[in-house]
Image 1: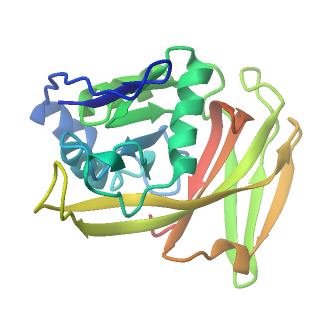
Image 2 (image 1 turned 90 degrees about the vertical axis):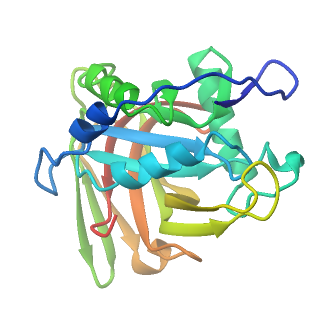
Image 3 (image 1 turned 30 degrees about the horizontal axis):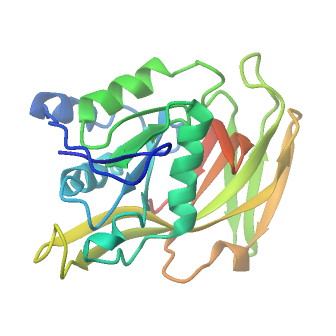
Length: 259
């Protein structure tokens, strides 16, 4: 079942049946490419400790993160806190990002678990087949992951090289740094998941804009101190069109070697 709300209406729950496929999952997580190759898709999971339908999606993220074809991360949201358990990882900023995606798409669809693929479309976050299909369908569409980005880390910081625009990418985007906790097990004491310990994978703890990209090849230097944040063990870089209030297609993505 899904925990769901519509951005245009008062917070509510809608329960929907979700089916899984072990065969699709097995195929999905096979390592098709060598580490270091450009990712095939970016998967952002919006999840909550207060949502009983989220643990299957959280487990799926743990498997998905092992596949080098994908940049996968979890964004814990706070709108189920009223049900008796305050999510220990959630931020209203993460909820804001999910709402902004819904507004940008124009469908108003906000629910948990929700997976947003390449900043463009959404599927149920526990449906491995739907995630795989969306990632495949978006390849080369609307400029998704069409711009090359390479990272070079030194003791002094991180050097980011972004290639020039492609025919599909457009020429306006921002480079974002996301601080990531690789794995966090949480013992949930109340609410729908009371008594369960759930492990969250590649959890976003903070994010900040590094700079603008205007379509020309560009380089950015991020000092070592800026790569560090409380509880963070790694990082993700996203080159994304649009603005925080109206996020668009993700043109490039990369992650630290430990994620």
